[in-house]
Amino acid sequence: MTDKTKTAEVETAKQKADTETGKPQHSVPDGCVELAGEVYMRDAQGRLTPLSMIRDQDKLQDQMVRKIIGFALVLSAQIARFRGHSFDDVGAFDALLAEEYGGHARRSRKGNRTYMSYDGCLKVQVQVNDRITFGPEMQIARDLIEECIADWSSDSRQEVRAIMGSVFNVDKEGEISRTEIYKLTKLSIDDERWQRAMDAVHHAIRVIGSKTYIRCYRRSAPDAAWEAITIDLAKAG
Image 1 (cartoon, one colour):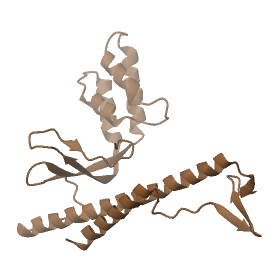
Image 2 (cartoon, helix red, strand yellow):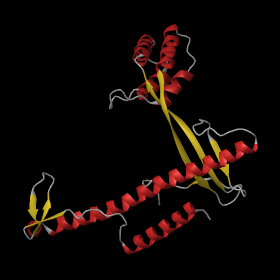
Image 3 (tube, rainbow, N blue to C red):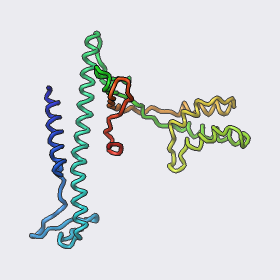
Image 4 (cartoon, rainbow, N blue to C red):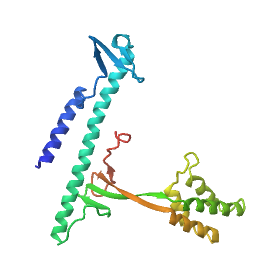
């Protein structure tokens, strides 16, 4: 058992024990200030209010929020450590494979990879997604597409009209749906203006970086469906 594994097991056991007793590990200040022998709490405007003058429900709410934040900070730090240790483990395994085949593992390689347990019931995926933005050519493309739609008959190209309605989110200025843009580029339309619009779309795409994700899955048997091991708080349960 490695030192990292031992440390992780100790942290998990301690967190479980503290969770069961309702005691957060992370120290969050209680928000109280003592001046001249009297205890105060600072409000959102920075004013000091004597503790004795604060309503019980406000004090109880403050304590509850600080308790929850204490646990949240612990979980956030643990997830960060998990991510770091996981990428270290994957990198070390890749290096061993490269050494076996006489090569060397590049730490920043972009390829997606999948690692499986021997019984085929556990899976770890490393996925690299490009982060993209759109240049000023996208506005030219939008103008050309709208020009095409305006010239087409009212009952034609309904698919294009529907996609256009969701490509450019009117509620959030400048927001563009990558999925809907992809749908547009896959449409086969002979109009010369449309072709120029699609050229503008392709030229508008800028890759500004990439982000690497690690995702874990399990299943009860090799022929069963995969189930994601959820780390997202909103989806856990």
